[in-house]
Every structure is written in structure tokens, then in C-alpha cells.
Image (cartoon, rainbow, N blue to C red; front, side):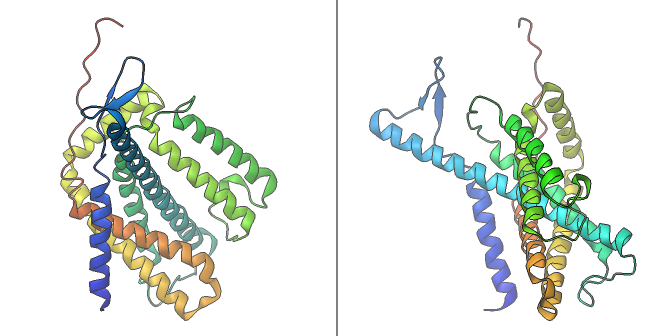
Length: 284
């Protein structure tokens, strides 16, 4: 099977996964007591349907967080490469001759940033009930704990966590937990405050005005993310001394590119609608 046909099939599968995540599988009615039950089915059959819907919702939430986490990995790894290229090693020409210029990584970084919006939107179709606190509270708590871990138990400083060439287990653990905590925070960002929610709604309104540009940008930047992934792959095959650290960048950028193409095929930006205006309440 040729490489283009393999890529086309992979893109089709990824598109189907994203499309399937738009469905819940269980409609519920919230009672005054806070207990939910199926809207049209009662008894044992209703509980089975509700459990199936809950399982699909949890899988969708995990998938959404995974896409956000992957986008953050792409941003962090690309930021480290650009930092090394512009500041640490100005004469460095990374992944030559397969990569034309390291400046193309800016497009890959943009692809990951653009993907975050719709990646988070997948998990916000249905809200999972919080346990004691909102999810962002746990995310902030995890960020604080991870920061303490990095400062006291790793050889790098917190502000250089993603900009130093250190592949030790201790440093990578700090990176994973930091990115995971930020992913959880981004997923629950509208619940942080009313001001944050209104700010995000304002951004969404502005995005609706330029959604064709965002649609085209997502496709173009996705191409560069895919190209950068292949360039690093071919360079690593030729020189395998950095195979392990490069593998994270290769896989992350590959998923970023495929996600961009799948979202373009779904016309995610073109189907974006502005948020509904909130009617002020006369009585609190």
C-alpha cells in the first residue's frame, strides 16, 4: 500500500473518531433533587442506556483532553526547538537537508494553537459533574504541586523547563505533569469566572468574523506541522543518536497535522456560530 493511500485512510479514521465525538448517546432530564434519569426510557433498560451514554461521555472527555495535551506537547517541543535555533545555537541548522528552514516550525506551532479551540469544544458538549470542586481547581492545585516538584527535585528551573536540552526522567515527569495540568485547566477555563467566560465568548465572536481565514490557516499550518514531523523522522532515521527525544516531537506533530486536516474536512471553523447573548436577570 502506498504512503499517500495510508495517510488518506488514517485521515478518514481520525475524521470518523472526531465526528463520533459529537454524539452523546444518552439524553437525560435533571430532576430537582439533582438526580438525572433517561428522558424517554425507564427501568433497567433506561439505566443501561444511561450508563452507555455516561461511558461515551467519559471517552469523549478523555479524547478531548488527549487532543489538548497533544497540542500542548507540540507547542512546548516546538518552542524548545525555536529557542535553541534563535538564542542558544544561532548557527544550528536543524534536521537538514530534509527541513528547508527552522522558521517553518512557527507554522507548526500555530497549527497546534489553532487546534486547541475545537479540541476543547469536543469535551464541552456535555459537562461531567464535578467532585467537590470544579476541574480547574484540581488543575491549579496540580500546577502548584508540579512547580514545587520542578523547583526542588529537578536540575532545571521552572521558567526553563521546556527550553533546556535535558531528557532525564525527572525533568520529563515534570514536563508531562505540567502540560497535563494546563490541559485540564484549558478544558475547564470558562468555569473559572464570569469574566473569563465573557472574554472567551468575545474571542469566539471575533473568530466568527474571520472563520474563513481560520479555516484556510488551519489547513496550511497543518501541512507544515505534517511536513516538520516527516523532516524530523527522516533526519532521525539517518542519525539515530536522538531517536528517543525526537520521537515525541515526531508523533506529536504528526497527530497535530492529522487533527488539522480532520477538522478542516469537518469544516469546524466554517460551522462556528457566535455565542448566544445572555439575557440579564431582573431578579437574582
